[in-house]
Structures are given as structure tokens and as C-alpha cells.
Length: 310
Image 1: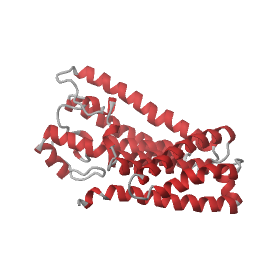
Image 2: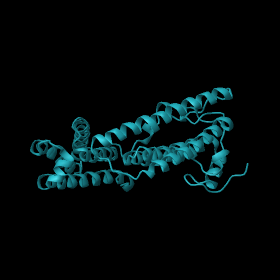
Image 3: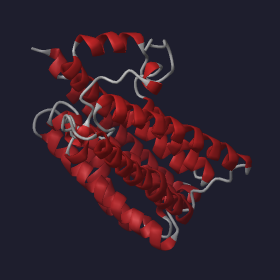
Image 4: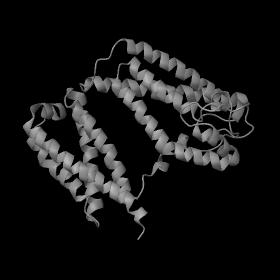
């Protein structure tokens, strides 16, 4: 028997076992510690919620540990219920301003349950599903006018920076305050955040310029450069655009005095590193072969290292 094929399922079952025990412990705390009940359920009647949540979350998570068909079905029920509770509790918290910590806990449970469910049903986490639309790896049309690439890159920067550095952080910061999750930060962090955003934006612009001018393409995955770019910031670090985006996100969080926006940026870095980067590097190796392998051996992914000569 191939034991490696059993490992993803084992990890998935382990998650649901921990979730079942954590859920049971949480319900004990709800009925014995008033602070836990108020912070996670607000004014909701715990008896009514428990009547549904214990069988559909705690018991179903426990059933997910069992072998055979029972395990995957239990995992599916627990995950579906977790997603439903997360959406419902999020709506309740947004309307009332209560139960914010409960929403945060359920968001974490939803993400982990989806990952564990994938391991049980698919035997893997299908990260390739993220590579659709503008995030699918395709080279830009070759011999396109440099002006056209510059215009496309400018449009991408406006759209993506607008969404990921303005719209999403403002929504997250609003929900953080509405859900009662704000933590006071020193006023000086706003200045630090502004410096980080400025420095990271300059790095991002320099990286985009290198891709556009030297690579005959754009930063967008669906219009990637046709030539391997080892110029500008790419001489010191392999992924300066990703570094810039993460630092920008952290800086925006500090400007907004929102710890959740900082977490959003750091979680985004994990998603990029473990879900997107392996596919991107495989695509680059397939496109540029030995040149890319030699480059990746000389220059580190995240931190500045050896400088590549022009």
C-alpha cells in the first residue's frame, strides 16, 4: 500500500479531530464563562445555537475522523455548516456590533475546514484552481508595442493597487471596528506605515518597469514577459513585486491602525508563497529552462542576496 497517498487524508482527519475537541471545549466555555459567551455569541441564545451546532459541527467533525465513507460525509457536513455559521454570524455581527470574536474564530475554522475537506476528498489542496482568468499563466503577445505594454501595466497597477491596497483594507478596517475587534495602536505607527507604503510602492514600480521594458510583457500572470527578466530589483531578489505587495499591505494596515489588515497582508504572503509561487516557478522553468534554474540558484526568493551582473 502506498503510504504517501494516505498522508493527506490523515492530516485532514487530524484537523477534524482537533476541531471536534475544540468545538466541545468552546461549548463548555460558552455555558460556564460569561465573557466567552458574550464575545463569541453576542446576544444569541446559546441553547438554540447549541441544538444545531453541536450535532452539525462537533459531532460531524468527530465523524469525519472515521474510516470509509462516513469520514468524508461527516467532513462535508461539518464544513458546510461551518461556512453557513460564518456567513450568518458575520451578518449578525455587522448589524449588531456583537460577537466579533466569534466571527473571527469561524472564519479561521472555515478556511481550515475547506483545506481539510480537500485533503479528504481530493487527496490534495487544489491550488491550481486559483490560477484562472487574469491569474492564469500566459505570455503576453510577442512583439507588441512597448507603449501598449506600458499602458497595460499602468492599468493593472491602478486596478490591483486600488482593490488590494484601498478597497479591501478599508472594508476590513470597517468590519474590524464594527465587530469590536479594534486594538489601539501608537500614533507613530501611522508614520511608519506611510514610509513602508512609499518605499514598497517605489520597489513595485521599479519591478513593473523592468518587466515591461526588459521582458516584453506585463506583471499580470495572463500577460507575462516573453523574456526572462534579470534587471532592476530582479538582480537582487526573485520576487520583488510580491515583496512590495506584502510590505504595502502591512504599511496600509499601520496607516489605518488595523491589525486585521496587517494579518490580511501576511496571510496573503503565505497564500502566494505556498499556493501561487510553486506554479509560477514551474511555469518560468518550463519557459526559460536552464537560464531560470541558474538564476533561481543564484538569487533568493524573498530576501535580497547575490547581485546578478548586467
